[in-house]
Image 1 (cartoon, rainbow, N blue to C red):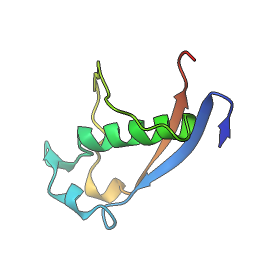
Image 2 (image 1 turned 120 degrees about the horizontal axis):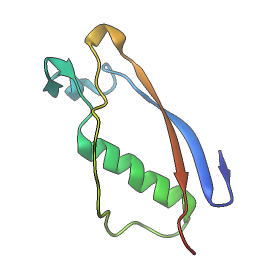
Image 3 (image 1 turned 45 degrees about the vertical axis):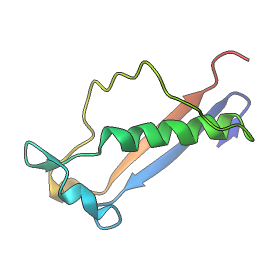
Image 4 (image 1 turned 90 degrees about the horizontal axis):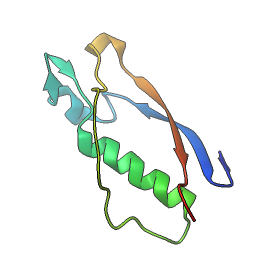
Length: 86
């Protein structure tokens, strides 16, 4: 859902659909790669500024993993993006 300078949506991540996650492990648990999270950020930027494309993403801090034991997948992420500035 997009309203003004804000967009919200859910992103479902499934081990069967994203099979490579079964091999991308941290402490033996499937873990979403940081590049996947940056792709979600790029898609959010595009949703907030149609017709424009992100050229770079800077000052990224990934402070937590998105991971879980195999029996706890699929995972559903709530994504919220807000446009900063004009």
